[in-house]
Image (cartoon, rainbow, N blue to C red; front, side):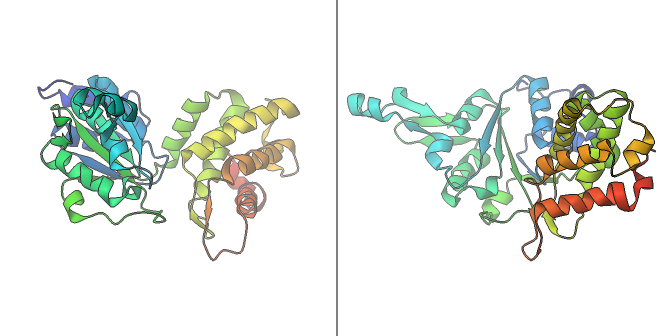
Length: 313
């Protein structure tokens, strides 16, 4: 990406070939960053935010700097610091300053992706104000850094998790555009899981459909405060494939095997679900249950209580 405006229509068409779904979100994110705006993406983990940004950055040929927002993200870690050993020998100078990701992104004209930025301390977030408003930042004993024209701050936050978060000031939010990014629909997630697991054949198709169904069910279960992202379905398929190889579950498993909860295939899915999903779901504080019980209830909904609905198509 240069200082001249990019061809956003061409970029949109080229980036879309690397994504499954997200066409609408792609157009909005692309339009915001091409217009020179900084942006916050609000949505649960595993909704493709990083994939979307990386695809745009790769297409424009600019770096993507990733920073995790947490209580340990100090201004010095974000902006940079003077090398203590060299300071003792040479005193403070620009030569012994070690730039942090914010300065690197400003100098190189890249995207600074600050994930869960509402978990960062207030003084760290306040450091961003000059970069957002003035596109430059003053570094003590090292001078000023002017942002390259393509520098953008892209932040993210999870609206379903307020533990350990900071209330964002108006001075920060007033300088950011915002886009809500939710989970994709079932057909898009089937496409994502199929692409990421490279599954084929009858058993592979069954696993992808069932993994997506049970994974999406975690997001609507009454005892769960937050369900699993599409990453959970990907892991269900990958783990189930290995279990199938260990247990000799045949590729030729027919529909009756699949719908009989006592057969090998449903047990395969249950075991893969337990390993892949029990650590990803978050129980409601008042729920008197365990993640394993919730996972089994969802499995029973798919394979015991209403097996006919598990039929493909």
